[in-house]
Image (cartoon, rainbow over all chains, first blue to last red; front, side):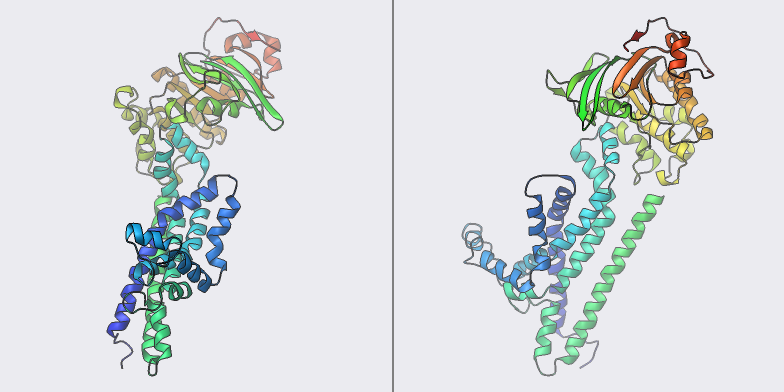
Length: 232
Length: 249
C-alpha cells in the first residue's frame, strides 16, 4: 500500500467530510449571525439562559450532546417522530443527521466569533447611515454586515474546522455508516481498529492536516483582502 | 424651526425650547456638557425626547402629545458628526452617494458634481476614508450630508477634531454652503470664533437649559452680553438682522 494512494473508502470519507462540514456551516451561518447580533445588541430577560444554552455543546461531552440529539431527533424522538410523520424528514443515521450534529457542535464557536465582530462595529456608523436615509434592515445589510466580515470569516473557519473534527456527537447520533455518516475522523478511527489499517490511518491523518491548513490559508487570504479594502 | 423638548437621563435633565432661523445658521452655543449634542441627536431622531415637539419648516418630526416620532431615515435631515463617521468599507464616492441614492430623484436638488466642486474633493473620490486627512474627512462628511438634499443640516462641532490650519480649510466651505444651497443649518459648537463667523441666530445653552436666544447681531450690540458669553472675538463677516433677543435668565 502506498502512502499517497487513497482507497475508495478514504476518498468517500474525504468527500463526505467536506460535504457535511460545508452544509453544517452554510446551514448554521444565518442563524449564527442572527444569534450573535441578538446577544451583542439586545437586552432582554433570559439572555443569559440563551447564552448558556448556545454554549452548552462546548462544555458538554460530545457523546452527551449526540445522545440528546438521538433522544430528541431520533425516529421515535420527541421532535424526530412528528418530523418524520408530517414532513417525512429523517435525521437519524444519515448524512443530514451528521450535518446537524456538526452544526450543533460548532455553533458556539461560530456565535462567539461573530458576536465579537458585532461588538466591534461602531453603532455611531449605523446611526450615521440612518440619518442618510437607510432603514434598520438596510443599515444592517450595507453597514453592519460588511464591517462584521472579518469575524464572520473567522467564525466560518472555526466552525468548519470543528465540523471536520466532529466525532463524539456524530457517532452517537448517526453512527458510523460508510458513505452516509463515516466522515474523516470516523474513518480514521475505524482504520485504527482493524489489522493493517495503519497506512490508511496515516493517509487520513495527513489528509486532515492538509484540509485544515487549506481552510486556514483561505481565511488568511480573505482577511487580508478585507483589511486592504478598508485601508484603501 | 421650532424645538421644544425635555429629556432626563440619570441626574442630567434637558429642558430646552427655542426657535431657529428658517434660513442661515442657527448656532447652539454653550460649554461642553450643556446638552447641545443631546438636543441635536433628538432633532435627528437618534435619541428620543421624553416630551416635546420638533418641527422644521412646518414639517412635524416629533410630537409626544400626538405620538409622532419619525425615524431618522424619514426626517430628511443631513447630519455632520464631530468625528466624521464615514463608512470605512466604502470609497469616498460611495460614501457621498450613499444618502443620495436613498433620496427619491424628484426630491434631489443638490447635484453631485456641484458638491464635489464646492468642497474641492474631486481628487479624493476613489480613496477609502482611512487614507484621508481630518479636514478631508470632514469635507466628505459635509458633502455626504448635503447630497441627501436635506430640509436642514445638523452639524455637531464639525471642526472640533481639527487643528487650526484644518479648521481654516473647512470653515469657508461651511460659510459658502449656507449661501449656495439655502439650506438652514443647526450648528453646535463651543468655539466662539466659529459662532461669530457663521451664525445668524444664537441659542445659548447651559446645564440642559436655554439661557438666551436671539440674533447674533443683537447679542453683539450689547456689551454686557458680549462679555457674559465671551463673544469679544474678532469677526470676519457680519450678518445683518434686527430681531430682539429673548432673554430668559
